[in-house]
Image (tube, rainbow, N blue to C red):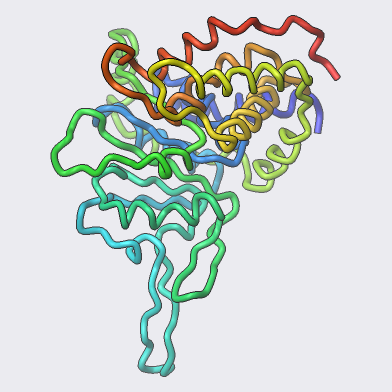
Length: 316
C-alpha cells in the first residue's frame, strides 16, 4: 500500500457520507479514526442531530452488515447476544443469534437499558466474543459499536458506569448545524432520502488491511513521553477523583497512529495527540463537584495547555 492509501480511503468514505450528512466532517473523521483503531464510539447529543443516519451511512459506505438495537428498560441481555431455542423437529437446542452478530452495531439510547443489559455489551466490546450458555462465539469482523445517548433527559435512564464508559475508545458529539448547513440539509432532502441510494466505496478487506497498515505507523519516543505526561497529569489534577487508566493510554496511542495514517503519514505529530486527547480521554475522568467543577473536556484542555509540546523531528 502507498503512503497516500490511508488518506485516499478516508476521502472516499468522507465524500460518500457527505451525500447524506451535511457539515459533519470532523465527527466523521474521528469516527473513522476509532474504526481504524479498532475501538468503539459513544455519540452523545440531543435527538435528531443525525447520529443514526451517520451510523447507517458508514455501514453502507463499507459494504458491511448493520444492526440496530433500541435500548429500553425492559430489554434483556439475551435480546442483544442471542439465546438457545429448543427445536422440536431436530430434538435439540439451536442458537438464535442476537444483533451483536454483525459488523456495525448501533446501540441506540444505551443509557435507557438497565445496568444488567448494558453489561451484556461489555464482553463483546472488549473481548470480541459472546458467551451463551457457557459457549463462546465470535461476532463479525470487523466489529464496531456506535452507541448513542441523550444528555438532556434524566427520567427513565441509567447513567453508564465508569467501567462501561471506559470500553468506548471515544466519546463524540454531533452538535447542531448552523443556518447555512441547515439550508443545505433541506436542499439535500427535498425529493428523497439520499441514504436509500448510497453505495459502498470500501470493502471489509480494505478496511482490515488499513488497520494493519495503521498499526505500523511510527510514534517517536518524545511523543510517547508527551502522551504519558498528559495521562499522568489527569491522575494528580485538582478536582479529578480518578484519572485515565492504562487502557486509556493505549487507546490514545492506537488513535494517534490511526489518525496519522488517515492523514497520509507514516509517523505521528504532537498535533495528533492534541486533537485526540479530549475525545479519547475526557469521558474516562471521574471528577468531583464543588470549587473545581467544570467539564471534563475543559480539564483535559487545561492539562494540554500546561504541558510543553515536543519540538523534535518526528519522522522515523
